[in-house]
Length: 262
Image 1 (cartoon, rainbow, N blue to C red):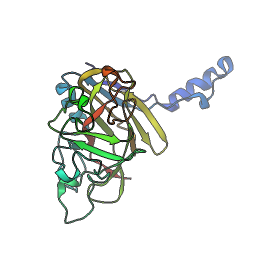
Image 2 (image 1 turned 90 degrees about the horizontal axis):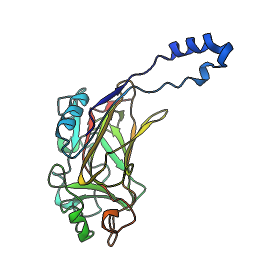
Image 3 (image 1 turned 60 degrees about the vertical axis):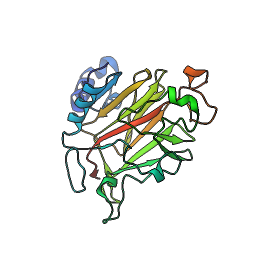
Image 4 (image 1 turned 180 degrees about the vertical axis):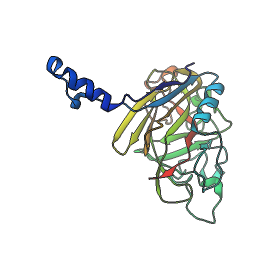
């Protein structure tokens, strides 16, 4: 289990001054200076309860359930997704940012999903309805439903102001994974408007639970790319621990701070 670790930005002006002073000896100039983003990284496996609580505090202790807030955090745990969008590939990518002012607030959470695959699936069966072997592989962290892209292991998350179509950004995002067998198989990559802020891997936890969450206090995260394993789930496709060729991974809770308009 890994506790939160922090990295602070080294002032670019200070590095530039040092480089200028040493230019004659080293040939260093300011084009060599890399401005690394400050961030706090929280990863855990097994019993993730304490680390998840720590990451929630970093994002904001207030769990927001209505539009119109400016601080605090949002969470998605899939369990309230209705039967019409469960145990099939019909889950809409914009389900959790309904913009109808008369619609339920529970669907106004500011997260929009996309995938190069064929859709998304929310499962109440640990995906055993796709292949019976999955019942022994996957477990929900917050019972009873899990989430996966259909036809792909890639999920992209962008942000809007909850209940609006206004583009937004967050400072942090976290994902709970189920059944990471291979190091580096489940990752979360963060993007600002300028490009990647870094990719972070979930810890290995065979038939168990992993967490990876990152907070960038000085950067606007406009997109997150989640890679949940080495391949897509499917009938007859087994996990690497069950004779298959790829590490299959599914997702549970998503956590992020309140999306703010850009």
